[in-house]
Length: 446
Image (cartoon, helix red, strand yellow):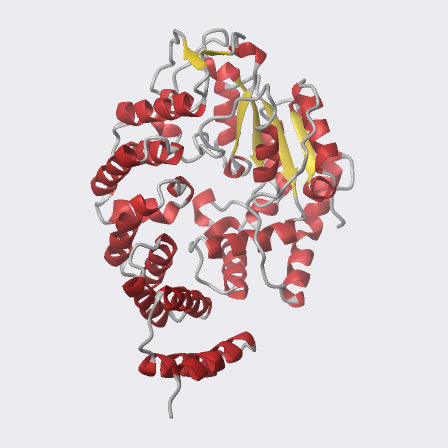
């Protein structure tokens, strides 16, 4: 007699042992005879969908998620994962439909960190519908900070800059209820306008964590944000000095608590800054900052470039920005990498972002060396309090130890093939020595 429970157990056993063909076969046999469907089954089908995705079984994963949604139609994670499967199949319309449906189900979801979401909305001309959905969600969840940010970004995509700024400022007010607005003469909307240091609010951007990506910037930024004299902006990464410079300085500054008083003390008693890893290797960023933020200090975390590149790849896989295998992705990156490659022409920039010395020379040509605090990520991971003490000293702030130092934006990834690591180690050998020579100390073995 066919028993769906036994088939399900066999499927789970084969799945755990890595025999995916047998696991899939028994999973489908269990479906043929399963009549006891409940919320537990919804969770099981979602897990199977996640597992099928790892083998790029997109249609089968979609079917598993659909079974889960039949039982639990308003599950955000299931909708989000199913949307990713449709993306891999090239069905943007289905993906966007699921995205729009999922917005009110998780109002605090930071869509602003998911470029695929915005690219898809724009491609399908569905940004206005997203705006309407975010506005509706805001009426239901008026205290959700991320809705204000997501709505501001959606309006920005439609070139409704003034409306976007309004929502960002409301978000800042929600984030800092103790702050009182004072008169502030904003700079021109045009990024190329020149302002004197005394009248330019960008002079109040005290620091920036430039990167690098997957090197601990999220953790360092989170620790700094807990200092009583640091007032962070609405979010960690604004991407203004790289991809969004066209939005104008007013757009940028509206996301900072600049030009306000806090707890009776003037704003100059506080510091503010952001962390954006793509600033480090974006070609135009140093010149733009030198023009508008000549007094800002910069903090850079450098991680072993081999580990950084592999972690970068797995991060993009996690957020569905990469579909190639690790080997194929790096092979493509090697193939397209050249000394003068344009920034946007290097697929995913896995390798190029680890050419630390090349990027640092560009920064040093615009700012004096003493304006930079360059740290090793591995030391930060080992002793975060000691690194944080260095940062506070660099910024001229009193040390503020934390009770604990959790890691942010981390991921658990499978071990990489030793051959790939050998290839990457050989590739970075010269560049690591170049970095050591430039900084006058051994950061990474060459």
